[in-house]
Image (tube, rainbow, N blue to C red; front, side, top):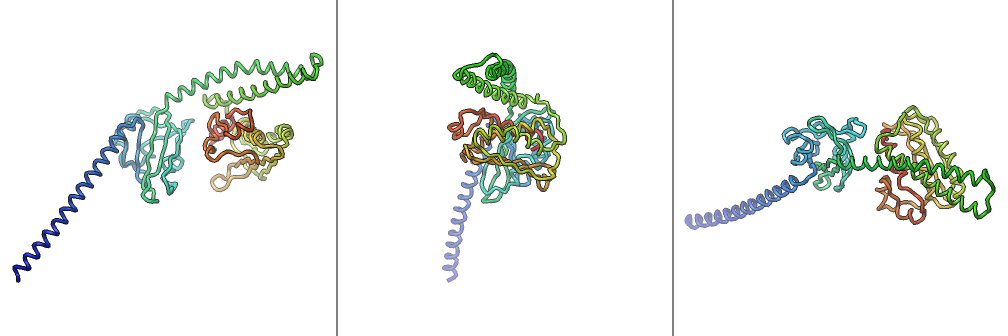
Length: 375
């Protein structure tokens, strides 16, 4: 009886051992797969020409690839385990350090996103030797289920692209200056013809000269827009910030737009909060912002439509700021194109069909000016 029980126990032990061996083999196989996957991922990340940095949910660096080391001029051991915001200096166009709460990696980690999505920005990074260089940055959260457990940042040195853009901007600036004088002369002479300063014209002649004048005005607007863009990109815009009453700037802009709006049959409504705070901006540049936003709204609103501009006091941490919004009953912008509205030379597909004239530079200029003053 004892012998039979011993044989039964041995059989059970063998079965347990077989199951245990099978589980160990499966675990070893899974471990090898994970190691292979990790090796492949590290090889891929190491071979990428762009810098890659991975952090945990506390923003501490857990991975940095060799390209990031090379681009930043530092060693992995200098940043591993450290807060990325402490390990890497980030500056804006003016050389001011970007605070932690406004840095892309930090904002992505604090976004509490429920699905992975990337964000893109352009900033300046500092190398180990202190030199600064422009970078194009993309960051995405790492999700486990619906929980953010870290983030991935990919950045690229765009020094060469910036140099090319600068050369293009310089060319546009020179070309625009050369065009401005003859266009102004053309406009002046057509005005003389139309007001009868050099004699009366027939009705047909007047129509032709009026067409020439309208074309000259469109070209002058285009050249002016190109000059503004080139000055912004080259940093040659004369900026003279002072405490400014934006409601006064807004009223002047609306008054100057009255004739254009009336000709198109568009009603322009305004609403400004009382006791708006004075905002430290350049009033001339802010006038460009108002002009672009309002003229855009009127241009793309059909007859009997409305444009409404509101200027309100900011709330909370923005209590010393002003919030400008412009709404219209125009053609709108397709949802799949809305992320491009502040891109240089962008015009919505439906706008191109309905309004032939347009440069695609207005909103790009608006964004650049507003960002220049921390907006």
